[in-house]
Length: 368
Image (cartoon, rainbow, N blue to C red; front, side, top):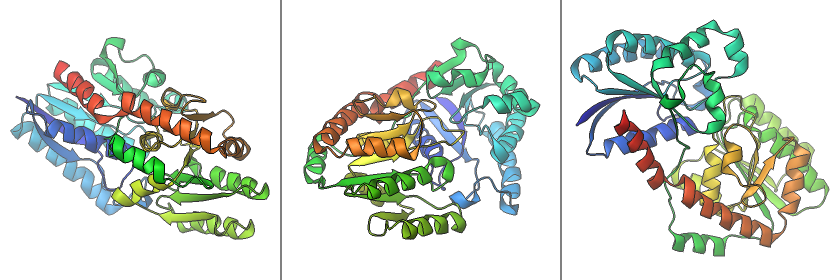
């Protein structure tokens, strides 16, 4: 039996990378081939805390360093699985952890990189280049072929594993048919579900709603996610009032578990015009596909590999409110919405369902 020490951010707070890491941890814990111990690297309790320094985080760093030393000495891991941050305070924190690992652990390490190493950072940050260079002799998992360039040719091709994210299929085919049957198609029921950070594109969706309203198109749009600050929330509310969108546009705040899923059950279009610089995958797009709704998403990172243009949804080229509104107008067609949604569900089951991911993930871990 192989001992694995699992080092990664984990929820809370609930965001794509942390949720994917939780999934990987559960796969290892449920395997009879491994004994797994995990250390949670993040100390934020909500999305408002992410990227901010405070006393509990400083204390947490020293606590994690102490726990890493202890587990390496007592648990004696055969393999360390490490999900490093690649920007901000998390990057500096994980650099300290990596230095400790290199000093005290002489065995194998695999890095699962879930965010971007941007060219501008690579050009301007010697610190970041040093970090990537430390990875040069190690194994690395990335989420898609589009992200190989982020490694800047430092890591050998033979040491790179490509493993797109996946999620558990929460609904049977019988349930899906029932959802599709009950799903209201009387109007566009638009969903934006992510953290309410401007880089995720909520402003663009809001402005697209203004365009639809001015054209007299029948729709409603729900925004689901935690606000980063009260200023943005107030800006959102003022825009609704100013542009006569009350009763059509709603901010529902944070939702989890069944409440989160219910938003996808009720929607018939999903929009995700992300411009988040570190975006890699867009987990929410796959969730929308699981529930059989067409996706309109920005064509960044690995997203062009996920969405099949004109078959499961639309890839934004300009990522503008006008372009979003254009595709939403197109999706006024109930027939088109349904056909794209069914194809999206089919693509999810074939490529992004957890059972396939579990098999491929364990194969990678066993090969090291």
